[in-house]
Length: 412
Image (cartoon, helix red, strand yellow):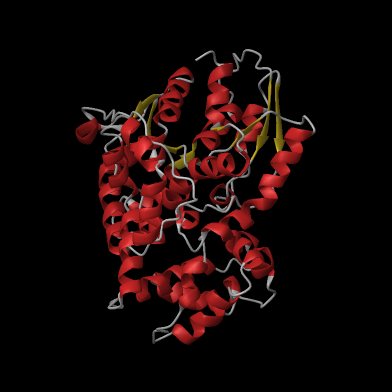
């Protein structure tokens, strides 16, 4: 049964309970959005065997996966919406507005290429992107909000491929790290810290020269390119997967893509990737449960608010970072769980989505400001890079990846 047939088989599983629509962060701030039930299962019945040409609300979905998390019947709602977007992307755009959106999708979807350009001279790139005239030009020409937060670039993360890996990868104490575009080009220090942590717990880290996981491409209508990236990445992973090596991610969106989307690709490696991919803290917690995680923590006197990213929740692994950080003496963590931050990859960068993205994140921003005001915590932590960007934009509070807290405890 192919993916489209599987989706069709699940249509009748929708009970019309509207839980997904009630919990949808976009639906709460956009009265014109018909919601995941309407855009997904309801319209999918009409799409069977035909295309609905005028589906303007398709782009309102932020692909946060909240609807799928809350659906009691396990209906893959966002897969239906993405399938409709895929069909709509094949319709040619002849008008000026359509071409502008197509160009914006091309730019925002190529986070990898933007990163490679940005890190050539990161200091200059960051200064240019702060200029009001440049931001206004991006807004008018491409519809990239002049008010939205743009992540800064820095020294890129170096590729550290195993020189003998493709001919004879060894399992042993080795892992393959899939850093993702944000870590690789915007915040490489997190990736470098992560490799030190893995080394401390006894694992050599291999970092092949991966392409973007493909999620930003799909979110911006570049489905063919996303498919090619997936096949390319799986071929790079093949010798390591066949050797039984774990694939580790520090980005929750990349992790979800590897676990949920890559197994659907038509290649032998796809049969292995889902079961061998782990979020960093998911992997560390498994080591802890087996008694293999070093517990030589030094005391870290610090308090943090924690934001669980939507794409972490969609993985169904709970909050392993909270469990690991809870083992460190002196660390106080409060799980805010106040909903989506609103940025959702590139969603909040778009001019017509910026205000909605800020409204979506307003509950989280308020919870952070209240917590800081009461002295519950002084900083924020989250696994998702773009969530970090949005939190700092919405509150001004310093935010870091949980692995950096763990590194402090390990004296790294």
